[in-house]
Length: 464
Ligand code: AMP
Ligand code: ZN
Image (cartoon, rainbow, N blue to C red; front, side):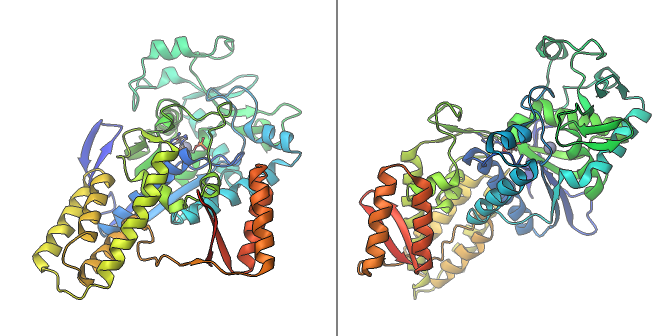
């Protein structure tokens, strides 16, 4: 029986899909805001989302999973204030907001592929659902949960007595006190939040609506899109822990306003990835991306493996030493898998069954990946070398997907002068920290049939 921790009830619960007849699980995951490169913290959350999908499928469920792309700029602060993130990025890079969205969407999708994060059944863009959002806002107004001001439409939090307390046990007084000091006199309650905002002249992304040229508040897109594809109430909603106190509380409030129901039964949140035990920040220059790891010779799948080393509800601390150890461990796990593949002995069926049960118990205990990986290691390291164990590892790979079957390729030691020249040029580029050039040269080598790996002993070549 699959058990999942639910932030709404603060307990682990036995999971049962609402649509038992079709064995179908409906999931909504808050997606990325595409104004910047996604960092490895974001990726922890999406690797979790992917693992959850795979575990549900391992248990025999079918999925209808929606993830959104936030390509409407929401503001630089959670409280609907500050500058539009997309517009800011576009201005800084002399590009249009649409170019910005396209560029960062393509970038994160490349990373997802490298991390073996499967496509969700639906990938939906906020800009394609402005009409649905407008209708949703109108419903909330009609039901008496929202009001108009000169700035736009606000959700009246006083109408929902549990506002801010559904997931986070927020104290309303604290929320009030915490609400911005530059109080908007037109708001009925300081913690009321914007649903639909009148666009100032200079605002780029705006749409004609019942209130003239407007743009949506940032919480409304998830409510409108999840409802369109999954209905008023669906099974599971996922996101990072930072979404608990504001974004998801507000999503619930909006649903109560429109449908009278809490939109999801189970709410799952991933704890943060820390860097050297602290927050990632631009000023500390430690907002790492998957490409940054690759530049140091770390495979994206080593990061996937690394995230399995901690339970998703605990913080995970990234250090360069830790990720390098993860890469070494992953290489060893592949080597051990190969030994089983080449094994000629017969495995004890009782043992196979026991391992299978242990693996299932681990993943079904609120996605306990550290324990599941420990079982995987036990199988890979079995003294009896048997193809049966290899087959079992391949079965577990439906969840882990770490390319454990991959044959390590031999290092190539002899190559043409042309290749040597590119390698020299690349070495120089890296010494000068010109990573753009170094990446271009990496691609050039790829065209010639070589993968370059940056190890501490310098560049190494393998066949593509
Ligand atoms: P955003 O584009 O900011 O909405 O973030 C995308 C997802 O990444 C959200 O689900 C966030 O909760 C999650 N996230 C952001 N920072 C981290 C982090 N350091 N560790 C884990 N998840 C994060
Ligand atoms: Zn969302």
